[in-house]
Amino acid sequence: MSGSHMIDVSSVANLKRTESTLFNVRAYRLARVLEVLKKNDCAAILLYDPVNIRYATDTSNMQIWTGRNPSRYVMVFADGRVIGWEFHSCDHVWDGLTLDFELRSAVAWNFFSAGNDAERRASVWGAEIVDVMRESAAGELRLAVDRLDPIGAAYLVKNGLTLLDGQAMMEIARSVKSVDELVLIGESLHVCEKGIERMHQELRPGMTEQDLWANLHYENIRHGGEWIETRLLASGDKTNPWMHECSARVLQGGELLAFDTDMVGPNGYCSDISRTWTVGHTRPSDEQRKLYEAAYSQVHFNMDLIRPGMAFREFSEKAWKIPEIYLKNRYSCVAHGIGMVDEYPNIVHQVDWDSSGYDGLFEAGMTLCVESYIGAENGSQGVKLEQQVLLTGGGCVPLASCSFETDWL
Image (cartoon, rainbow, N blue to C red):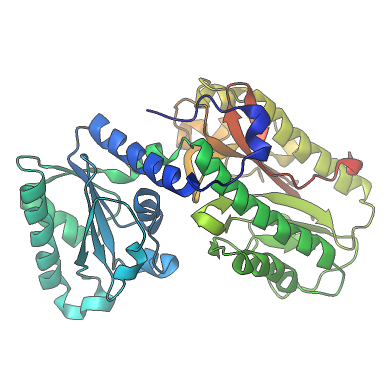
């Protein structure tokens, strides 16, 4: 598939938006979708996931709400035509697009929208989908779908369509970024780093975890960002094990404070950065320094390891070896893709390979997050670090500029 294999590494940090950036991004993303449809001999893809709809059409509408309530959907045909079924009185979200698209009114048949009439409404919805396929892709029966409730899927199959895994197709399409996408990713990261800087400045003993976390939300929203996927900020003994979300816990001077931004910022792109500090920015204890050095080593060793063409399994096998004392509390993956949200691939530790690993190849143009969590089993504190990078022909180039605590090393 086409991608950004010839990215000039020296210019990544200096990429700037031009008048054509948004046009180029829209064209590139739609071309990626069409390419994956043709590769899979598929006439069209039906999209409900709001992130996939945004990727293919650059339209967004109440992303969190429509992610839970299937009330708008889009069909993209392999020849580039698009039909959008939009939520009530929301045609305006398509204003300004140069797509070859047709708009219709969405038929919602989830229980919230349809109650006990859900099955009948699903049949109305399904009849329209089948008719569209017959009219717009005559003789074609292969339809990819990214997310579909059982009643709807059963109707389409009963009426002659063959359903394919559209989520897999979209993950592959989204995995390789263009140079213009990197511009938009950079704008999201810039806002995220403003939030991190504000958190760093405001961090002091006596405030709550939630007080501190609000600073990231503030900078994201005021600069046109969209939402934050998690609330992963923890302090003190809540830093071990990882995955405690922020609470009203009061921060104590000298304890560790760790966070993971998971921030969907401007342009709909995710900025996924983890850092660990001490509350009050005090000098770390020997134990805190030891944990930090291990996490820092894991992230940077693995960043240096990844190359285009390397298999995921090989990377997992050669990745930094976690000392036994920290192994049980390891993070869920070694690295993962990142774009509009967490994306393919997700590469697990070697110890987890047989149960949850899958193979594939790294490609130039992928944007990735390299992960570490270091905390001893039954320990009282831990360190979370994560760096967002671009994979080029020469290896990983950091996209996030916010610094690590290198004076702790």
